[in-house]
Image 1: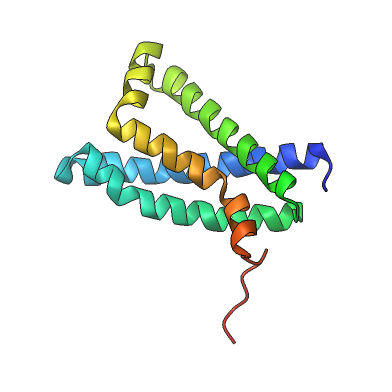
Image 2: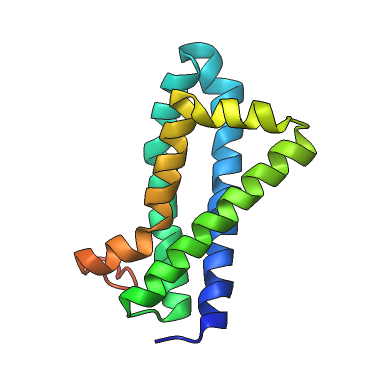
Length: 142
């Protein structure tokens, strides 16, 4: 079992990296994909990519944390999700100047709900990886 400070730090970094990847892919989704197919369909196109990226980010952070216990990985995932949500709210309010009502309306739409559910699932990648027996590192094929 790792020290709680390590879990907090690595979980926060994982959440920050998830946010960064989502911000980049979200920009592509909004500017290029959504005008062609619509917002909800564009979200459906984006989700497999962002979830795959988060899976591999998780492997990197699990290796950094050297987390073998379910408790460490669960803590890392919940902290990552909290960090991700905090960053999303902060950027929405302070950079995009959305009101709290607009933010709640966006979050309660089908697209917003689907995105949040997938963010939660992705933030728990460290747990899924442990339960599936995924190694902490990816070896190159022999």
